[in-house]
Amino acid sequence: MIFRAIALSLAIIVGLGTIIPLATNGVEAGSQTKKRAKNKDKKYKKYSKRWWRAYRQRSKNRNSLNARKRSLRLRQIRLANARKLSETGGANQTKIAQSGKKLLVEDNSPAMLPSGEPAPTGWKRGTSSTGEIQYNVVSDNGSNLGSAAISVVGVAVGADNNKTVGGVAVTALRRTVIDRMMKEGGWVVNDYQKDVGDKKVYVVVAKSAGADGSIQSRLFYFTEADGRIYSVATNAPNDNSRRLEEESEKAIISLRHRTQPTQQAELK
Image (cartoon, rainbow, N blue to C red):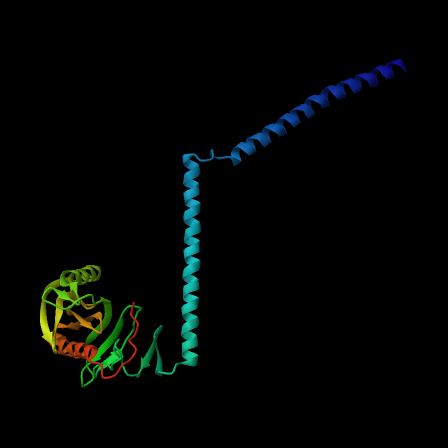
């Protein structure tokens, strides 16, 4: 009995001596692993160079994603408008045709000038923006002569003379043409004043390259009518420049001589 009790006591002491160190090592190992994992998650200090680099990359990715979303939304709106237009049509739309991915709409309503007068024969209303009315000019046989655009560039503040149009210096008007040609890759050739009807107009001659590489003739007329200064800008191949010049002068005369009071089209 004594030997059995002694043997049992020794076995218990040996067992405890083995289990306690193993448990202690296990706890310390777990703590070290957790600490190393925490340090691994924190790759760099906040507001350090690496942090700012990652921040800028996240911002770039976010902006790129937002841009793609806006582009997709814009395409959806355009498709919806095109679908609605093809289904409902309009009062002045007489023909709707599909050409590739572009929707062509032909409008046979009479073209009007900003003054409310009818445009010269052969002038067809084109795409217009807030501050400009555009026209496609065709000859009697239906061939395209070029394009024209009429806009209001300011309010007349005085009488015309050799250096002003409606009280505005011709140098300022010429500067507007130079700025436009710089944006469109063209250049100004000459400027002069001439009589159109019973009044002088200021003309700026410019050139620009067409889509096919040909040289286009650009004419910019400035005239005063009804207290406003109008710009009549034409664009045509060199072969048609003289004919389009005659058509533009017809439009200028129509701007000045209104046969009846009409509300002027607003051009801002």
